[in-house]
Length: 415
Image: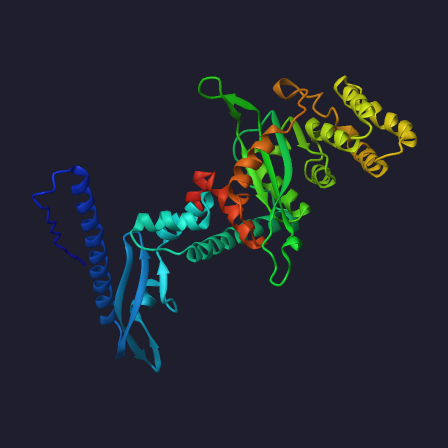
């Protein structure tokens, strides 16, 4: 099938600016592109109708959102053996859909939604295609793509956990893999009928894995072989999926040295024990000293002593020292009891990186996960006035992380 369309552009004598000429030509080219697309679809429908033996029973209208803008087409309806349908829709796989967007538009809409609030993303996409696109459409496209990606991820996870399959790993064995894990809260959408103060929070978990640091540019460093995973699932599921991601990209279980870094929360240590059993465990000292200061606000002298001993390499004495002094404390006893439990649970991780070699030896911070938490979660999910449903945040987070891997992003949309 060959379709031709003549394009005519009228440029007035008063137009002498390249920018004005560009604007006129671009608008005409877009308009001509829409006309050409309609003519092509009409030609396709004509060819399809030739192969159908049925009774023509009127017309309907389709509306497609394309990269050229919104395209409307009057289409033929037929009746075959008592059933009515639109041959063009059936041929294009668009049955039972009165309005649809092309794959390019959906991908671009989701791509923009990963980086911008839905309202701004809809505005940007509308400018690109020259027709209005609502933010509710973008919501739907994100949910559709997110569900599809999560189904794929869950099938892989179930295969590893239930059937004991091994992930297909790529790359060479690493000398070192560092795994940093943390969680943060985002605002949850208020349930209908509840008061504002009853608004709950949603916990977002994030893990970043890397093999060291490397220089790029002048005086700049970045994480080497960085892999990021996140979600709003439970700790056990999150830990297993984090391990799968690490196995596929970094062969983490085969690394000569492994280090898990966290803020000391119980669930992080449980993930380490269940999924990275051979790794060393390191508590982030910034969180550790923060816990001490918060619990010792009215016992500052003892708090300073505990922190000093930690930095002097005497962390093994913290629990014994606090146990000895706790009976003499009269204020903040509940907070101090919680601190003692925290120290007991994490004392093996005070110097977890000490026995490692190279640049990671004596690592005491979790700056990598803190930075990525801000980049991945903070800049998209924590802006003023934002609130989320759990599925909405989960799907968008998955797609936002997928977008950071251009090869995987292209593969997802191409398939």
